[in-house]
Amino acid sequence: MSGDKALLAGLPDSMQMARESALLGNYDAALVFFDGVIAQIIRYLKTIKDDPYQLEQWRKAKEDLTTEFRVVKEISMELTRFKEPPGRAAATAPQVGSTWDDQPVCCAAPQHVHYGPPV
Image 1 (cartoon, rainbow, N blue to C red):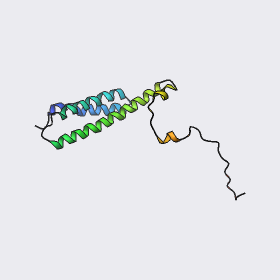
Image 2: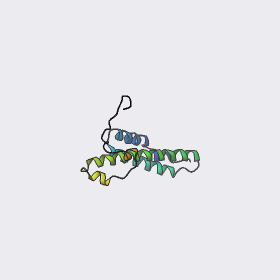
Image 3: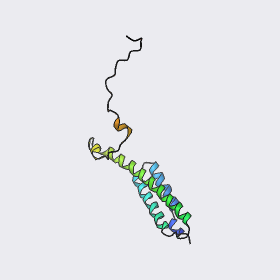
Image 4: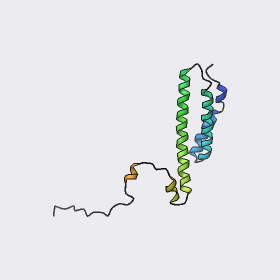
């Protein structure tokens, strides 16, 4: 037997609910659905004994869904930081390097540009 298919009951519906919830901005509900789907897949993976191809496909699906879960979790955490009082969110936010970190907050005073012949 290549896995207990009963463990996958409701998986497509839960996936749809997870993604719809995320798209509609209900991130907490989406995370609950994603968590349930991933748990179902983990239980199913333990039942696959004789089909390495199927096992690898389900592992890949679990990895992809875990990535989706992390993205939704990051969005949820970012929105939570917006709800904090000004100044506190910056202090508690994880330090993330980006190309914007190197940019000044405000520009230097504009320099005079001469467009005519050299003076």
